[in-house]
Amino acid sequence: MASDRAVVTCPACDLEEAFEKLQSARACIERHRRETGHDPAWDLAPLSSGVERAGEAAGVCGIPGSADDIVDGE
Image 1 (cartoon, one colour):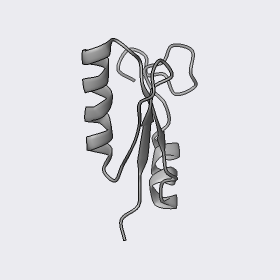
Image 2 (cartoon, rainbow, N blue to C red):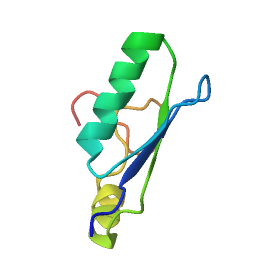
Image 3 (cartoon, rainbow, N blue to C red):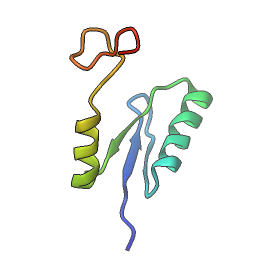
């Protein structure tokens, strides 16, 4: 049985749609922005523990002032 991985909602209108695939949810967000000018958002289902650990290990780079900011290609 498939499960919803993302729910797209828009605070400016009644958009609320669930998706099994993140790609489909992302396409919905982009289409809604293009067609309405609204700024929808998505809520993601919990990720597997391996994906969460990989994300934590990757950290954040490119954000000025963050501990993981890459400066001058370092």
